[in-house]
Image (cartoon, rainbow, N blue to C red; front, top):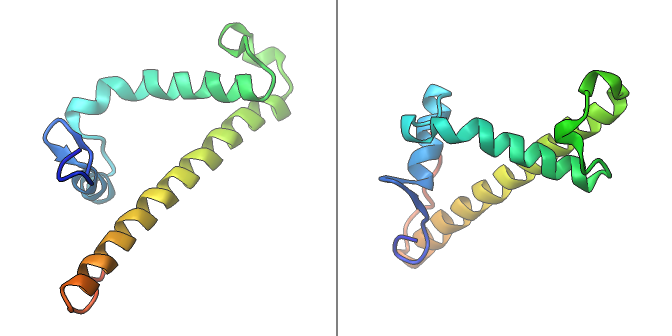
Length: 110
């Protein structure tokens, strides 16, 4: 953690990564090799939570679409919840900083 508040990935802070990915829709080059294995691990963990501990080795075509959909839907729900938490954290930090500096709160650029 940088300054006790901001986690870094290589040379990028989370705020930098948010700006990079929102403006380019691309994952930073140094993180690209980790995306697929991280999502696969996340998928298998989600499936295990739903009662499919051997999902990695199952023939997905033999499963009902409802079960496959529950895995993907569960992943999406958790990713959105995580993104909401990150956004709320940085919004709160900006508001606290503005309050502490007796300044107008900093608005996000669209």
